[in-house]
Image (cartoon, rainbow over all chains, first blue to last red):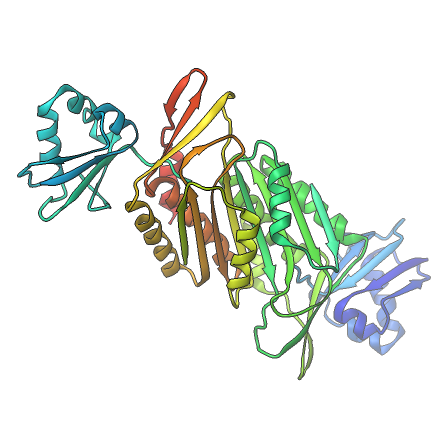
Length: 82
Length: 82
Length: 146
Length: 146
């Protein structure tokens, strides 16, 4: 069980800000592939990973990062703060 | 006739902030040499020109600058503003 | 160090004065204020989304990096989220140091990292619709110099 | 452009707010405040001498150079002279531009030039006597990057 969060246009494409997912994914990429296989809106949101950023437990990381022990994964576009 | 101004430690060594000088000096350096020849306090203040800066008519310039038409020459150490 | 993420406006001048008063031994205080621009014309709302929980953590991490690199008496970061309008102040950064170079460099470092490493996203609403602001290559490249 | 040379104190926060309000179309405002430091300990008075008449002219010339190099919505320079004490604010610079890089660079340029090209001289008075502050090689070298 892991909380998956979406922000900005990723949130809009998925259609919700947060969901809890039952998964045995080993890496972030495994989780992405599971989500992609679910429904068209996921496939669309995750169609170009180079346009996405990921945080595991609120730390920026890469798509090959392990998910072992993680409670929260967030997907979002490149940040535009400041 | 030209106004000669002194600032900071140059003023203190000369002993006055301003004087009017009768001179036919062609360049700033000519004027400096005339002043040096006057009295010990001038020779002392102008002993090391690399430690001094000069402005002619309120514009920073070099010691070889011409004095033709100038009304005001100022001598001072390197600035320490900010 | 003081990091605030808030929807309310802030008074940059009052913040600057309080920050300067508190930064003991500093000879140099630098501030940066970011203001909403109506670039294309017709900006109705600039919506700023953020990631509650991660935002403060990410900013504090960026500030900690700055404190390791420069000798800073103090650092302040305020960043707003929610609905903003043209000419509203979005955020401010202030740095205090003994020397001006450290204060300037640290403020620029903080801005460069806040731009593309703190979890904020801007959406521009105009009468023609709404668009997420794209991250720029220039902002990403700005990190290379540090 | 606003250049003020004065003996009175100023309120950096109030100045920053007024400056930001007036800088139309700016997305970035950078300020620098210089504060008197008691470096050796025992500073009684920091005396700042200047060259009335030339000072405003020299600062305005430096500001004009900055305006040529960067796209600036506005520039503010305030510099005090006379008798100051530890923790007093000596001077401030503010720049406003559409982009942060221009605002930062212009503020740094102004500071580098004000340090060694505007006719101000500092003298530190302590219980042990009084000494003119020496210009530093670092301040002179700072001009090389522009």
